[in-house]
Length: 380
Image 1 (tube, rainbow, N blue to C red):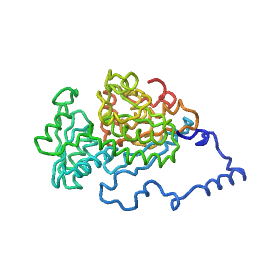
Image 2: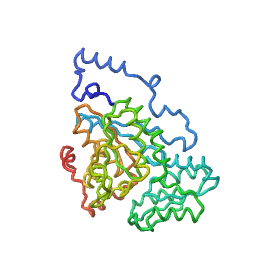
Image 3: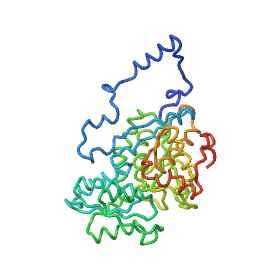
């Protein structure tokens, strides 16, 4: 179980460095803080030199959102997955799925990888395919941000777009990718049901988080797409802290909020967020150890994205700002000094023409108001 909050971050303690006693206290605290030779940063834990681009996946830093934490009187920490070489948390799943296919012999030298994706998994697969000498064929719905298609084509992927439709439609990108893999005699990595997806986070992301927070965590909050990240991280962290609160953050249009709350998959509305939210329980999501769920509407996603950029310098994607908003709401209801961890899934560069474009936001009636944090965290 996580440590009591009284032993942690004290938001009310501000030493008076103008006095001799206060300055002495600060100096003693600084002197007592371990430095790099004895306590290396996580980026040094994997070694100074990585073996190829695939070796650069993972070991991302943990970032404390200073202004948000100070305003709340609770710590909000973000696992900076947007700093992976392919720019998102999906690099980890891509790595593990490729290595699993290589291990079984399904993926042979010069082979073809096929995946259906909202973008980020495809980008990770395409990047690693180049490094390993494979061909990447990526099937995407036609409603994703233009930056994702451009990135995939720059990575030499064969991009096939299909009309965005419901999962029951045989022309859904998931089913199309499966048929295409069979026709091309390629390897369908099947990120939604491939256990290597969640395993990547059980073996790497979860242990990294636990090490970085030094076992001091009260809640873990994030959204879900395939369920791999949430499934792997939550199942690992629960082995270390059974009393840890795990909260799913879910957008309108997804059925997972209802599933956690009532056991039934129901939904209403839709969302501008990309790559998260789903209307079924995947094999990867079934591994998740979730205690509660919170709904996050688009206006709060947009407001938090712009608040984070302005106040923290964090340039995140829509799922990232959704995660942080939900983490802040969960933190607000915990005792002062509590610590909440979430994930920055990808960066804002992939959403500049949407989430950070005034005209696009205006067309969606989502122009950010710039309201204060207290107002931003009110309501749904």
